[in-house]
Length: 126
Image (cartoon, rainbow, N blue to C red; front, side, top):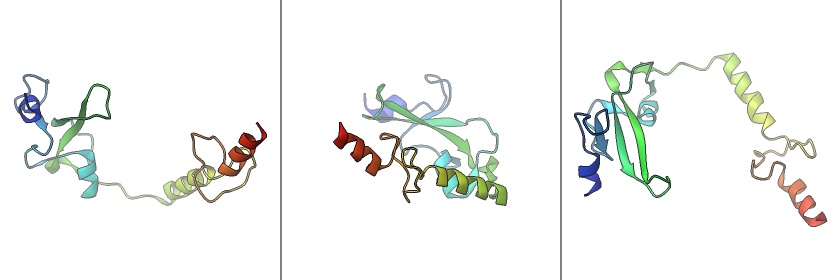
């Protein structure tokens, strides 16, 4: 069974909601990313359907993206000065190494937990 036939369920009998294969969603429905590209947001509306496709990244082998109605989408809320300040502070905190306390000018890798210089120093000492 091909993916197009497997995931094509516009009445929602098989999956509980209207389901479409990748790139087969009807006009008037969009994913969150597609809404954001148009400077829109779902705005509290319920999910109108879903797009399903096979993926090797996911363990189950199937990925899902929910669809929302374009006519019910609302404009994205603008950033306030307080939100900009909070975002700037949060991004600055991600650049400070917990080991040496210096602002490294790049985001500290979570896989290392410290800047590359500190990590290499600990690796050489061990």
